[in-house]
Image 1 (cartoon, one colour):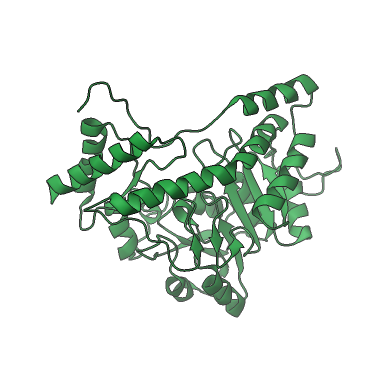
Image 2 (tube, helix red, strand yellow):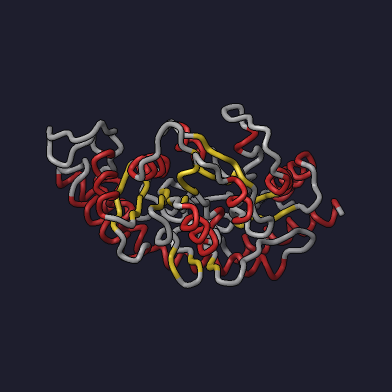
Length: 369
């Protein structure tokens, strides 16, 4: 290994002078809480990413999930079908609403929820489906919407990792009754911290606006018991700049992914099914047939011997976490949790970085063959 090489990080937020100038502008205005920047960000995000649907800005993606499902009526006694191969927030937001997550398996090619598993999990208590557009690949929304229509269920999309992804020509976040996008620093775009909720109906959007702001639209005219989940103008100003840069970053992520697709050997590269546009929040490979220990050794070799950062998302399926502990049999989810490994795909990669990543993965894969 060349001692002059530096670690290629698995993710790298891109914050430039434009973002700094935007923050300074807000600070100079004296209006730093929720105000005109938030309103402008909502309008611009709506036009750019969700086809004009009404959008509500909140302080995190998790808040967006929580408030969005509450606005759809989620409460005690209800069940929501969710994949287990995801981040815990997908299920946490169901639980903190007083409802029960019902975990189902995923497609081994796309890592997104399996419609057949969803249909099989529906009971008389099921009220909704929460598909996850995992790693930036869209879930099969046509099949899921058909199931929801047959059974009278709502659909709330977890688009935390999928800004700009498309399914059969339509943007994610425009299919269900609502959707959430995360704006955490490592996502495809950021506001520093925050989230966006897109809603299909004005009355649901109004309910989310009430819930994010202590239950009021007019000061001291509280209509419901709400939360303090507002986004600040500081965060919105950052997000507005990032939104303008997102298309170029997405194209670079897709170019990086195409390079890896063409040159990686000895691993299973991500599948993009027909009709899907993948935005590669993560470029996730599989070490086919590996145990978790073998996959972790592969990752350690990349980091320690080749200085290639990487991550495992997610090593423990949600249904196996101590907070849930259900005995449902999800063989694909269990397999993926053992085999997946995410490589750097962020837009700041150089040509040399991409070549180093390919050489490292191919060397480690060959050594373990």
